[in-house]
Image (cartoon, rainbow, N blue to C red; front, side, top):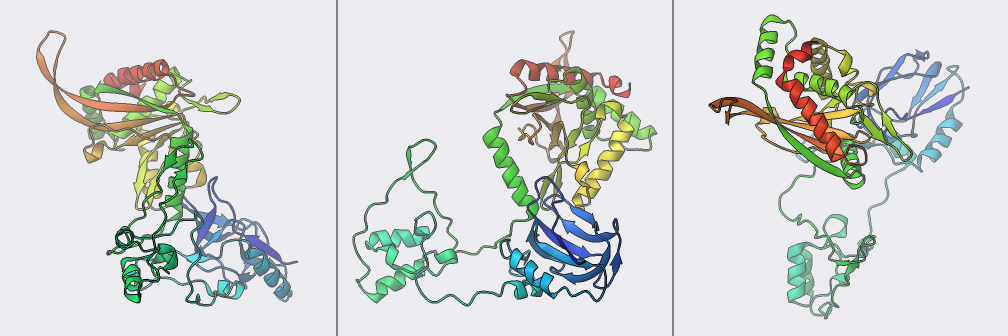
Length: 442
C-alpha cells in the first residue's frame, strides 16, 4: 500500500520547512530510521529519518522548496508497480489548502535566483497576468500611496481613489499622480478629510502608520524562517511578559587572573562567558525561585540549571542550551559551548540542543558594549546581559585609589516570577561567586 509522507513539524515553533536535500532518490528502498532528507526549520537544518518502509515512488518538492507543515513531500509504496496516480492527484488537491512550495528569493543581483518547483506547477498552475484594471483596495481600507505622491495630490486636490497605482501591491507613486494631472481635471476633486482610525485596545483616535517610500534604490531581503520566528517570539515576549531590569557591577580582577592561569595550563580554553554561565548555574541553585517558569496555574521550579547562551548567526540569534550547568565543571562547559556555538552557525543543532532552557544569557562584551538590557526568551523567566569589563578607579578598604576591572551585569526579570528583592538577591550571590572565582572550581 502506498503512503504519502507530509512535511513534518521538527521544532515546537516550526510552521514551514525548506528542503535542503533528499538523501534518497526515486526507486530507492528505505527502512524505518534511514536518513531520508535534510530539512531546514526555523532554527536549524535537521536530519529527517524515514518512519515508513518501502520504495520511494514520487517527490512532490525539490531541494530549495519551502512548504507548510503538513504539505505532501514524498510517496512511499510497498512495491515498484503499485499504481500511485490516484494518490498523487488526491495529494495535489489536498495541498491546495496549504501554501505552495516556493524557493527562497535571492537578491536582484543574484543571477541564480530560484523559480517555483516544477512539481508545484502541476499542482497549481500560475494565474494569468492581471488585467489592467484598478487594483482592489487594501484589506484595511486605506489607499497605499508614497509620501511624495500624497503631497502632490493634496496640493492639487486630487482624489487618489480614482488612480491605479503602478507600485508594489497597487501603491500609488509620484509618476502615477503626475500622469493623472496630465490627463486633465476629471480626477481633481475636493477629497474628504481622512477618517481617524480607532485603536481597538484604547479607543483613542490614532493616525495610520506611514507607508515607507520605496521609490528610491532598495533591495528586498526575504524573511528567512529563523527571522520570522525571532520576530514572532520577541513580540510575544515584549507583549506578554512584564519585564523589569536590575543592574550590578562586579569586580572581575580575580576572575580574569584565574582564567589566565587555567588557559595557560589547561587543554580546553575557557572564556569569560563560560565562567559567567557556570557562576549563574551555581547561583540558581541558591535561588531556585529564579530558575522557574510561569504557567497559568503554578510556578514550575527546575532542579537543574539549563542555561542558554545567545549565538549570532547570519540569519539571526539562536540560543543553544547547556544542560545541568550546576553539575558540570568549567572544562566541560567550555567544550560544550564551543561545539554548540560552531554547529549553531552551521544550522546543525538538534532540537533538544536549543529547547528546554530555564535561564538565559546574552554577552555583547566582545563588541565593546558597556551596558545593555536583553529580552527574555519565553518561557524562561530571566535573562542576564553581560557587558565588557572596563578599568575603573576606586577606593580600597584603606582609602587608597586603586585600578580595578569592573563588569556590568543586567538581569531582565519576568515580574510574574521574579520580584525585585529576589532578583537583587540572585545578583548579589552571582557577584559574590564571580568576585571569589575559586568557588567555580569546587
